[in-house]
Length: 184
Image (cartoon, rainbow, N blue to C red):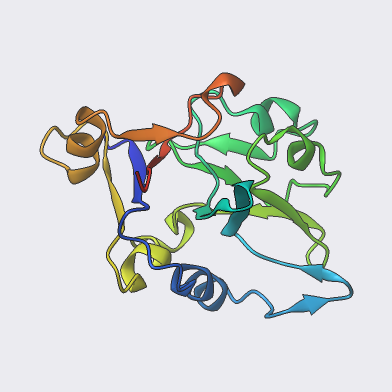
């Protein structure tokens, strides 16, 4: 059985946000703010590092990290969050009560409450639609790699073996399965 992961090579990312738009379109999420809230399964971290005159701007997309040790799953009081055999963290919207405990527990800020349906939502690697992740398929720079961690010939496994791909916030102890190759 496959165990899925993603690697995003920030050296090739052109910051075009096509991944964000593709995700919103394929998941039929509203564009812009609705009642003061913005809905997205894929967000961005964009920040300035350093002080004038040596300032750099960092930018990278953030998905659900489909952790091996997901804090969101443990925080859910009604068992609406589960992990598939393929390692994908999914939310059963019929069970979800929209309390937001999982949103608060996620160290990656990758979950949100979709008030239109009264349930939490997040990236599921497009698993619910049985297709490759939309963000990856439509990325013009081809900076995203998706594959099976148990397949030694997958590009994801090779990139992880190179030692260049690193997870966000490893100190959180969640063992995330989305990795980044830094621009440096």
